[in-house]
Length: 388
Ligand code: AMP
Image (cartoon, rainbow, N blue to C red; front, side, top):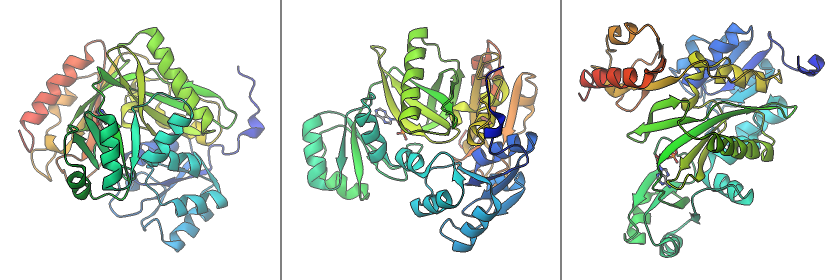
């Protein structure tokens, strides 16, 4: 048994966890919270959020609503966020009133690409070369210095490839800036990576850290398509990825779970792409394939409980179910193909309308042949889907 001071356990089961955001990540966090005897209060910021079916209490009001803020901090014992684009003012007020984990500073650092990249550079953590750009002249200077393919990314509100533009390097900077329509951006060198991997890492208030096995990620339309666990990388690389993620959470004095995404280059060097200050899509397999899921780990870290084992019980592949696998916008696939696989776990998020690129659910396939089975089901679902 580790030497644990249980009196320092500030938020035991029975406490109310306030969750900023009501998407699928909040929904899966609510499930784990319920299992462990916690209450949940979800502040969705809008209507029809996936978590509302599973939480104990819900606030369906915008994040700048003063009454909503008052209710949230009055009813929750401890707060966390399921997505990072919460207004800074809301995060600050929540943090001044109750415990917010991770901190507003950590959430904002990860949410804004300028702050995120500057943090990485200051910590001497390897990432793609970048330039902060605020006007056409700045873009011209950055492109002249880089002299090659690049990705222009908005500083704020970018995810799943949104707010990104790939550049060859010979475009007219004034035209590009004019069309990009963002107040601030970063220009990043295009990385011809060999593969993409990610690591989920959790740290609690006592500074204890646990890391899940790195996984390999494949994208479709810039959105995560498949996650393969574990990533087929050397023990040395696995250690390097874990060491980098550890440096990041220590430097941010981070409390909670974080997803760290990496590019793996041909020469086997790692570059950090981005950090997600919350559970991450590439950690969903942990629900079915690890001793402790990333959501339970988030609860444990946020509530300052001892952290759980991250051991992967067997190889797994997570397949994202995007809306283009739905035969019609309001008609889900017949799940027989998935359910016939007795070692596959179906997760649906309860979303009513299937937009082409909307994340509707995921399936976790367990076993040595998980990838072949996932690819076969994916092909079947896509063939019967909206665009098939
Ligand atoms: P992001 O929203 O920054 O995670 O980017 C989404 C995806 O775009 C990444 O997972 C990569 O596949 C790709 N991408 C982003 N930045 C770069 C880059 N600098 N070089 C090459 N591909 C990139």
